[in-house]
Image 1 (cartoon, helix red, strand yellow):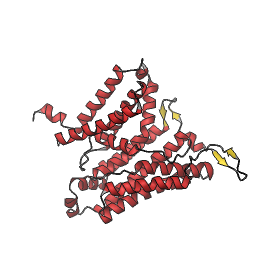
Image 2 (cartoon, helix red, strand yellow):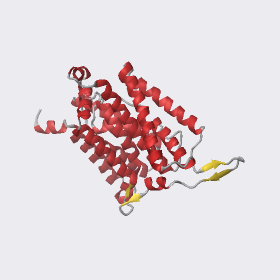
Image 3 (cartoon, rainbow, N blue to C red):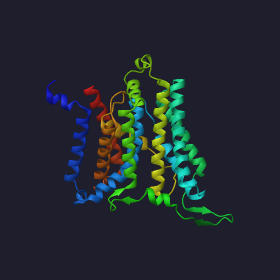
Amino acid sequence: MNAAQRILAQPATRAFIALGLIVSLGFVFHADGAFHKWSTHRDMLRQVSEHGILACGMTIVILTAGIDLSVGSVLGLVAVVFSLMSIHWGWNPVLAVGACLALGAACGTVSGSVIARFGVQPFIATLAMMVFARGLAKYVSGGQKISQSVQNADGSFGYVELPRVFDALDARILGGNVSVVTIIFLVCVVVTWVLLARMRPGRHLYAIGGNEYAAHLSGVPVMRTKILAYALCGLFAAVAGICHAAQEYQGDPEAGVAYELTAIAIVVIGGTSLMGGRGSILLTLLGTLSIGYLEKILSINAVGEASRLMLTGGIIVAAVLLQRRRA
């Protein structure tokens, strides 16, 4: 293998090439110059940030050779609970955010415990959590969106004031050029990078994904590390759920449907191996930008949602095949 082939074999190189090709398509199919405006890129970052936050947690889980199908449902559950606590019950924002983060981490901990302690396949365990969390969201909300509309004792409906925390999370800063949710996403990226690149549990995650049996023989606390991975994935899903509720001004029990597909696509397109043990959060950041730009380019060119979903599915398959070819 010559030097050029070795460079192309690097996941980061392939991720940069993929992002470059997608951005190039935007300059070609710019929708009468819409792609050249900063507002298009700003809105893209805002729209993809929720998926990027989910992808941070998904990266941690996939590095252990696992998968988490429940992140979309946990997002929906947290969005409902956060809206109830903040809008209807009038909780202090700090308490509401803390409770919702704990709820997301608890969902992940349950999934991780089932996987690590009882040896259930991650696909099955997180599929069960996906169904349970979605059902719980519908039960808690009564199957209705939790918004500013509330029913009074006499059966009439009124409106309550939207909590300031919603406006704060949905705001734009730096002269209106950057959304707060984008900043939150970048903070999640930094936190994940510190965990994976600078802390011992991060090395344990890579070791488990590379060879779980060898990691166990080397003294890695496999069970505890797996539970931690899924707990963090649930925590990030809760962060995304809070952001979703703030941006939509409501908690929808149907929120987050199929978001797990996008999160997985982001991680895979970035170059993190589904076999575990290889990848990084910086690759996931590139994957997030790739998916964000792809969806934005298709959107400004009025490509239908059905076509966008089919294209995303095809890209996932292509990315996995490319990983196998380079493995």
